[in-house]
Length: 387
Image 1 (cartoon, helix red, strand yellow):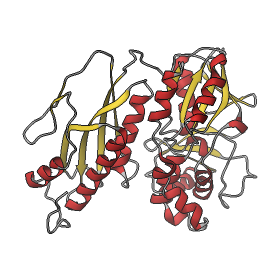
Image 2 (cartoon, rainbow, N blue to C red; image 1 turned 45 degrees about the horizontal axis):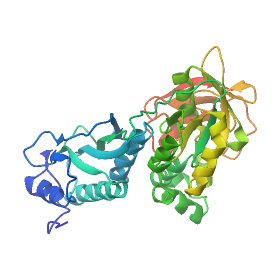
Image 3 (cartoon, rainbow, N blue to C red; image 1 turned 60 degrees about the horizontal axis):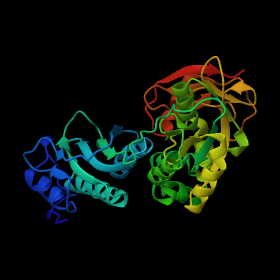
Image 4 (tube, one colour; image 1 turned 90 degrees about the vertical axis):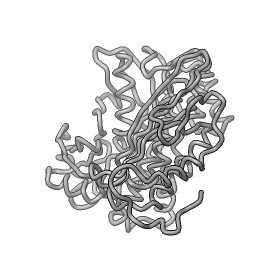
């Protein structure tokens, strides 16, 4: 990209300068043949000639972090399309940045989106970019479109009692990266190598589940879901709700990203309810589960059976005979005296209503303190009191 001589000068409110937008668009790769009208100055829509097959569309904003939002906006939306059985193909982005943002910030954001799209084989076809006081840090609202080339659309609730829950990829990859980047003051006691592994988790091992999701689709998966906000517990609950069943989880079988566990313990967050992009939940018929595990292993995807679905009067999760709450587990309770003390059992789980991050503390005031210390706003609501 050709960068202006002074790319640190602040941008004025409103649409970004045409010259800057022209440079950003000119740096896109050659368009795919089906794109009849793409991202151009003066055009408010794109036109795509769609071949036969279901068109799958997903949209998600990136708001919890200001770092790597270009990459996250692409991958989060690509994951949502892929778990429906479609190959991500076309991407639109609404980019909002606050006044005084420099051109360099916008250029870096677009460069990150471009790299992620190239890795996926997808293309930026449109969107909107604006400087506005409505935001206090960069925000990207992405939309991804893809085709279910097999003609089959996979849902999150297309399974029933007796089916097998397979986890592909460890949980806490995204959570580890976000905490390590946004809450460094809370993590100073962690081993530097472990902290660096958490910081770089968006790249290694990464949070894309596109390839394992498409592989699972080809293997005849019953249902797919990619847990994000609310963590692994929320993702499992959402699948149970969609199918109207209960899911019994084998706690020891769950795959965790170890730097993520360490970051959660140091910051007071609950691993079960922390950002979980990078892991895939795939539900197979019992006779297909072992074949699927072997196929994932051949392609280099870590996978394990972590539970089964069973009939139930109401949807939900069961672990060791007790229900797992929607946003958190009582398996790890931080205390006021330090994140390593798990002896107390009179704690309540406080969940931020906008960030969907849970902390276990005795009081709302302490919950607010912990949540703000790790970079979240926090408007906590007490949803469960430990017995």
